[in-house]
Length: 188
Image (cartoon, rainbow, N blue to C red; front, side, top):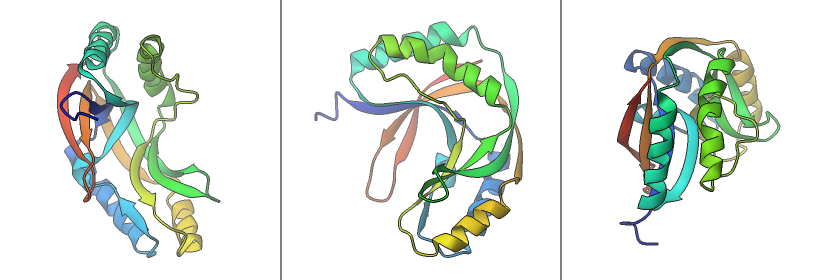
């Protein structure tokens, strides 16, 4: 693959800096149990709206055009980051995340763009669950303690943020973890 042609891209909502400290505190609480969790770096915390994977310049321009057309129909909205969950299930944990109590607004955001992304060849999202990935489980050591901690944090409140922009990001995978770079910012 020619790296100058393909870019690993996704559409996201960044987290207010004031809440990142609180999210890191939650990561530290989870880390206390000693399970092999690889935590997301504070500067990489975000809600993903759509993951595109590797795209060439032509596809990237199509994505930007869709966002430009759709963003004008959207208004800023506030969400509360609330509750901890996992994918796919507590029996087989791969991803630890924080959620929101405002599914409808986030879902509307995602639904505004997804049909247009499907038209240019991307897979339709089956069931979009707004979530903020905070870590990935890398083994089953101390899983029982981890499940107990997740259940304790099920109703945790992180705080409110105003969603007033979307960011098209580039993701570069490195041995020490991904590096995200903002390519375009779109105001709601």
